[in-house]
Image 1: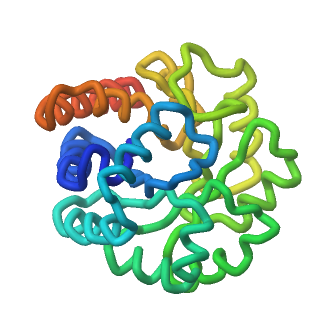
Image 2 (image 1 turned 180 degrees about the vertical axis):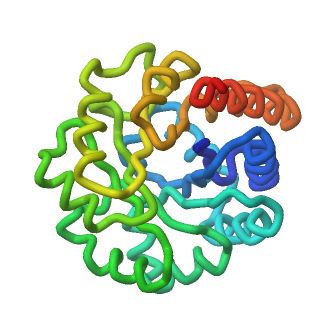
Amino acid sequence: MPFFTAGDPDPETTTALVRVASEAGANLCEIGVPYSDPIADGPVIQASYQRALDAGFKLQNVFDMGGVLSNEIHMPLVTMVSYSIIYRVGLQAYVQKAKAAGYSGAIVPDLLVEESSELSAICRGEDFSLIQLVTPTTPKERQVQIAESSSGFLYYVSVTGITGERKSLPENLNESVSWLRGQTDLPICIGFGISGVETAKQLAPVADGLIVGSAIIRRVSEAANREDAKASVAQFIRELRAAMDPS
C-alpha cells in the first residue's frame, strides 16, 4: 500500500505515480492530504507536505485527482487526512465529496476513539471506510475499542515515534499484531518504518498489507524528473510485492 503526498511535486506527477503503482502491483493507495501541522510524520513526509502547500495545493485538488484516477485504475484509493480538515469541511460533506470523487475511505490519524462515533456512523452509512490507528503503546482494551469503531482495515503503527525508514523493527511486533488479529475480523495493515525488502519479509507472516510512505516519498524527491520518479517507484513496489509474496 504505497503512500503519495497529493501535489508533491505537482498534481500531475502524483496522478502519474498512482497509475504506475497500480500497474506495478499495489493493492491500495493512500493519498496524503497536505497539512501545515502534520501528525506523527517524519521529516521526509513533512517536507513533501510543505512542498505541495508552497506550490498552492488545495483540498479540491485531492477530489479532482480521485475523480480522474478512479476511472483509470482498479485498486481502492483512500485519503490520509487530519480530522481538523474533515471537521472544517463538515463530516457528512467530506465523506460524500470523497466518495463521489472515487475514494473508498479515509485514514484519520488524529481522531480520538472517544470522539469517533459520529464520523464512524456516517462512514458506515455511506459505505465508506474509517481507518484508525493502533500504536505499540495503545492499551489492549483501547485497541479493541478502536477496532470496533473502524472499518475497512486497521492501521497498525509498527514503532513508537514518527514516520520514517528504519533498519529494524521491534522484536515483539509480530506477537503484538497476532494478538490484535484475535480480537477483530478487520484486516491489519502495518505502517511506519518499512524501509525495504528485509522489513517487508519480517512482517509478511502477520500483515495483511504493508503501508510504505517515507521510502517512496524519498525516491520521488530524489528523482531527477517525473519519468525517473515513476521508474524508481515502480521498481520499489515490485520488490516489495515479491518480498510479501515470494511465490
